Length: 230
Image 1 (cartoon, rainbow, N blue to C red):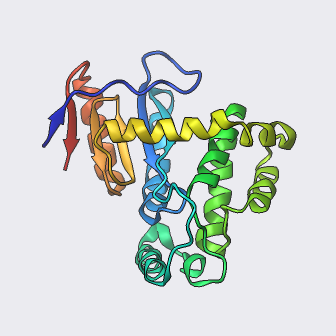
Image 2: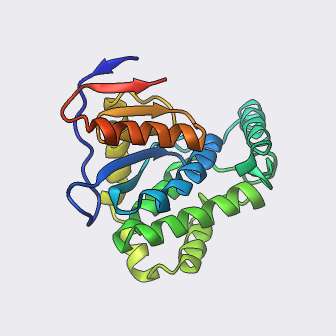
Image 3: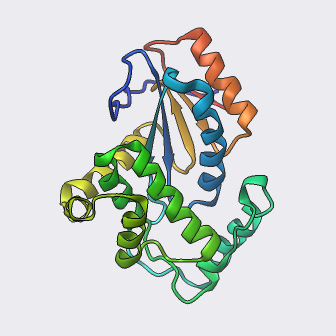
């Protein structure tokens, strides 16, 4: 275990003040985030109001730049590996082997930040729509036309969503999230911060996530150093 001081992650929305906050740093195109988020989703109903769940963007490809042939091969290999997991049924590598791979992770993460103003439920619906399109259908969800279509399908108010999407402050929120993650020592995702104090890196099994969350709830650590759980 490693340890160093950590600042608290700011709560994103209305919930009981004593609810435990879990922050999942992720990238929409990250294959193991796809798995981790589905596994954590199984725990949402189990814990109910005990836990406040927050998604924060950590763009693995923050800058515009078409991935070269070798990068696309590596990314396609990750998708094929995830397809062998129970949560990865139906995942195809078409996003990276086709003619329209995404050049940056920022657009879908900014869209998710824009969606959050209408509530976490609609934000998660948009994320699910993005991931279905990207992982199962090979669609480049970094394209603006695709994002707008998916936002409409998810039930977002499109004029308001587009206004927030184009607001530079929304992009800065994603950039601030990445800076916050780096402050925790995060260099890759998925990474789960529990109560602003414990960090679980990588995609874990549902039982392992549950065990760590239960341990935190039992110990109710407050104000301690960041604990990286291996």
